[in-house]
Length: 190
Image (cartoon, rainbow, N blue to C red):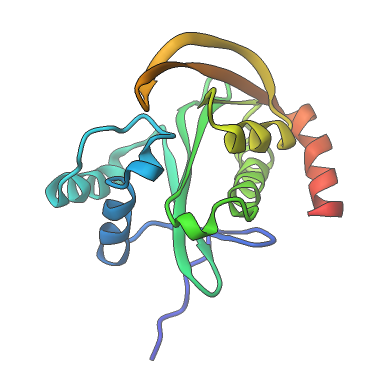
């Protein structure tokens, strides 16, 4: 008999749920060792099974982080998303997302997961601002952030080395009032 599916948050296209070391470790390990995937994030060194297992073991200890798996109905786990460095006093956090399943890129799953997580961040956790960033060559991430309501706040010039050259990091931020406009539009249009 199949176990009941754990659902923490439900979006239009995605389900956000706690990660499970037993079922998710190997898939996450494949993604974070895939050069196509990690060119967009801060990781660049290979990760061993032991290293990935330690990461899973330490999730429960991370009091300033909420990390969730992103699932879609017919495929299962396709990525992860989270709120990081939550500052409970100043009501801020940083956001990150990885869609590891490359056949799910550019299909709106990341945006759906992010909008769902932002709803939780602003309307349940009462956070007031979410910060994020992306590498300047990542047009998908740029479009995704801007359509979620983020505003460009600045950058770090020639900050990361990818694909044989240095690239800028673009810093973006989002207040609840900016997100509400994007959220209403997303609810109407998808």
